Amino acid sequence: MSEKRPQTYENHTKLVPAFHYVTMPILLLNLLFSLYQMTQIFGFQSLNTVVVALALIVVAVLSRTNALKAQDRVIRLEERLRLQTVLEQGLRPRVNDITTSQLVALRFAPDEELEKLVRLALDSGADKKTLKKAIKNWRPDYQRL
Image (cartoon, rainbow, N blue to C red; front, side, top):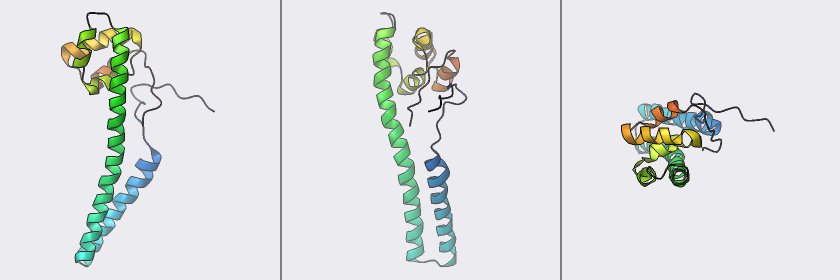
């Protein structure tokens, strides 16, 4: 098995080829074809085909986004536990003030950089993009959905 490529801010996003390059293009083409058919022969059947094509796209998008939301909740729990053990005593009570989005970004930070980044998140309300860019030594997450 080949080694995984080092993860950075620039390459950490994940594309799922079966979803992004196969499923979604097929569903979008199906919708376009259904719309074309409806312009040629308008009726209940063609309207129904368009509605079903739209519903399939909604189901596909929700299946992906709901899985990511569930994963974000797990990351939130993991990071809160990690912060409770790594941070100095004075910052621990403020861990629950960090947003889920910020916690998802902080998972890429090594323990040595956490305190500085948590202060940035809490004091300035830095968003996940800012937090990720502030990480110097990226801690990879290869299990993201």
